Amino acid sequence: MSLRSRFVRGVGQLRRLGSEVSEAFNAVWRRSLQVRVVISTLALSTAVVLVLGLVLQTQIASQTLQAKEADTLNRADSARALLERELAGVDPDREGAAGDLNKALDRLTTVSTSDEPASPGAGEFRAALTTGPRVVGPVVSAGPIEDVPQDLRDTVARGTLARKYVTIDENGTPVPTLVIGQPVRTANGELEFYLLFPLVDEQRTLGLVQSTLIVSGLILLLLLAGIASIVTRQVVRPIRQAAEIAERFAEGHLDERMPVVGEDEVARLGESYNEMASSIQNQIRQLEEFGALQRRFTSDVSHELRTPLTTVRMAADVLYASRAELLPALRRSSELLVAELDRFEALLADLLEISRLDAGVAELGAERVDMRGVVERAVELVRGIAAEADTPLELDLPEGIYADVDPRRVERIVRNLVANAIDHGEGRPVEITLRADDHAVAVLVRDHGVGLRPGEAQLVFNRFWRAEESRARRSGGSGLGLSIALEDARLHGGWLQAWGKPGEGAAFRLTLPREPGGVLVSSPLPLAPDDEPEPAAEQTASVPTPPLGWPVVTPDPVASEAETS
Image 1: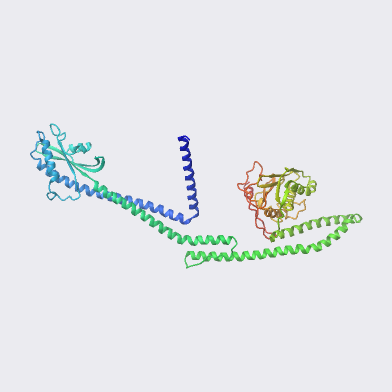
Image 2 (image 1 turned 90 degrees about the vertical axis):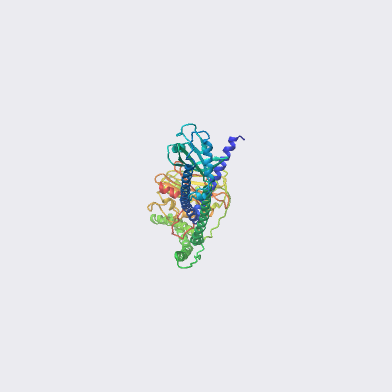
């Protein structure tokens, strides 16, 4: 592997690692109020500590250097006076002047401090003398004149006191130094006098101050983070406890309540939550009792009606069998009576089935079946209705698609979907398509009739719901077919979804797992046409079934797509 490829691979790994760390941090940031408060407090405190630390360090450095500069100026002034006395009779132009200058510097550096003005902060220094350009003759120097910057020498050569902070290299070590230069008058002219004060002690002091500020700032930040964490924890703990109790309450543990301690805002929150939970619990119990009563009433009425209906059916069959002997008006009445009895019996059967589904006693008789045969049997049951409506049925049913399903319930779902498509297809072709993949099998029933208006995809599974009250059902349905189909799909752990557009028809897609207990991730068939956007995510249509007459809200993404179409 080449160096370039290894570098690219390493950069890619670093990027992935950074992305993972960023995602983990973002997840913690979104989910934890305590983390957000502590990090925010720490960030603001860090900014404040940095600003204060910089201000303090700047002030301390400024005061230290000012004091140092004042002491060095005093020392430079006293040294100048001493040199002027020592060099009063020295001629810089004569031979041996360099020796006189060195003696004067030795005298300056060895003089007793008791003879000097008070300048205790000046510290050690080195001195340099030079005749400079203002003296006629060769330049004579003494001391480390090479360490003095040229611009400073130019200023002193003009007869002006000058000072400058420089860094001097001493044996390979950079040493910050304050250089003070001034002219020294002699009998035969002026000399340039320089004092070099190393700032090692001041640098060490400022470093100690900086280290102290950094350590103190870090300790302060840690203390602030700990205090913020403790304070936030006191606030977050009851909120987290309330969230956990609310989650258990939502799962069905209706007796969950928040503990109330004290009389502060958190206590008032707990009291309000407990009152709300008690109110919701009472309402849920009332609804459960009402739903159970309504289901029992529906079941009892359905059973009680079967006996008189059987008697009426027997009498109607007798009249219908002898209708040829009846008058034309009576003959037509007997035919209508039998037709309405058929519809009434279908309605009672649907009511009994929906009662069993509501009671949760419906069982799934799954077996390995050929899905093509199941769909064909369902279509054959409604071919007569399709012929009466002059509606062509177009089948696309591949062979060899098997699944573990309840054939009776799947057949009923497909029959209801096809009958609904015939009722609303306005004589246009109805397409029935079967497809499968490794995990799921799907049946799509597509018509090209009136379609669904925005929002109606949520309502089609409601009991007794009609898009148009004036539209008659050619199939003679009870109005419960799609509701029962939805519950049959739920028993399989599948989806039953709807899509529609006004004037373009509607589509109903049944998606079932090929094996019992399978989890659906996608469907083998698209729900919307090719030119329509597919829902972003599939969702199951298995929703709790409310009591008879209550609306069923289908949590599928097609509804939201239909609302925006």
